[in-house]
Length: 108
Length: 120
Image (cartoon, rainbow over all chains, first blue to last red; front, side, top):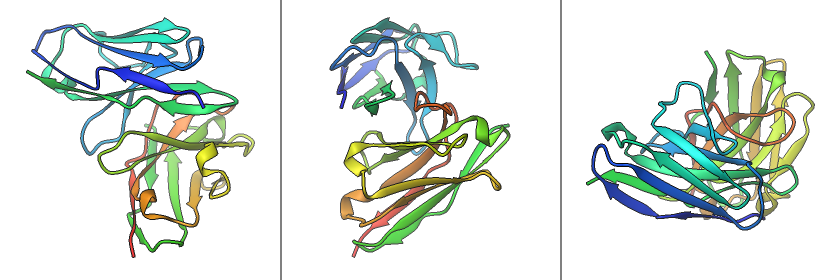
């Protein structure tokens, strides 16, 4: 299996702050990396696919970058409605799918 | 609009089986696949496997091989996930999600989740 790590595991930031989450894969996954937002009691929501592509309807303050083993997810200006847990997810057609452990974001 | 509507909550005893359904609407069912993802209480997301509604191909998480079966009924645009030999650590919310038809990739629409509780 491909293992995914995320850091930090949690963070507190002020409204308007720039927030950055990193995700690292245990082996090269090219750009096969997606990012999801999950609010309590709700299903996850796809935000970014293939490392840097913004899903339709997702605000432009969300962005992603990276390739290979190291990836970054950024919220350019944190809003109160962005309070959630964020997960990275890799896919490989032989080894399947793995999620990162998640990063919990709240407001300072 | 795309919708995935899952069956209701289940309570099962250890050793039993559970079958969760996921009815799709608002898109051409056979042009996509369905992945199943579960989340134990207070824990992260765990991918269980994928099925192509196009050709029935499957890809199961190694951890669940032999205990899980995913099927589709294209006549009703419904996907099913059956998990056998249930244990207490299978207690989780189970989600279906729309995926690519050729391989599992990314999940753009999700069901509302089905809570499965395994308890004696």
